[in-house]
Image (tube, rainbow, N blue to C red; front, side, top):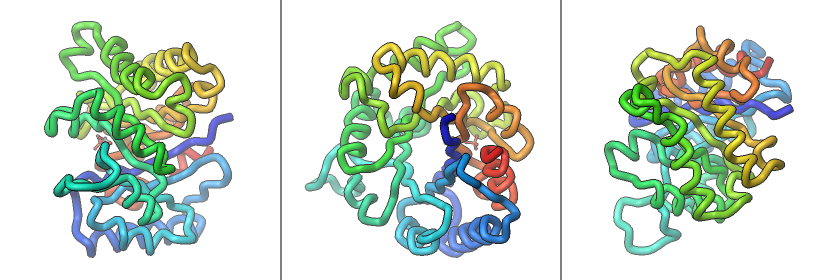
Length: 256
Ligand code: 13P
């Protein structure tokens, strides 16, 4: 059985003080037993980059792993404002979210650029969490699977058949992000199953192990029914990851 993963994407929210308070509440939730992960689930939080160092110190020794929200496709050098995968490793990050729809739409990241970032992240020892997903227009015109498949193929074309070994995919329908409109468990499962088949077509073993997360208005109420589906291995949680109680409830749903 695949272990579940719940990752909180804090996006560009909060202050240093709020980040510290949230982490402390989460650690308290896990250590008091109000949420117990057991061996079934991993939990990661992805704070804004400027808080990673501080949060890294706070989560050290706890059940909470650390992730970043982006990294450069370059290893080092004259790239003002960028952060390298190696720097994230230096702060004890284990995961990095790549190709989030907000980065694709607002910062013009292309499939090819995301594939390069994915390569650099893996080479540095990070586990990339590749985000894929369709817009509402694309879903309504029946293009969901084509869009998702092209986003995944860009990585396979660049890195070959084992691209998704030690990696995670997050299916995040753009129309469900931050809108309160969640994909139904059946809608999400349909896409997750296709994603796994697509990866299996190039590597069956990797596909069986691959954690495929759902993201898009996942919350304390709907997490359990989504994660009950055969190919949904956890969640990439935005808004609800900023409230300790809700995030802990989602983590608990993943550890059943
Ligand atoms: P929301 O959970 O706020 O919809 O955001 C999802 C997301 O974009 C996670 O990466």
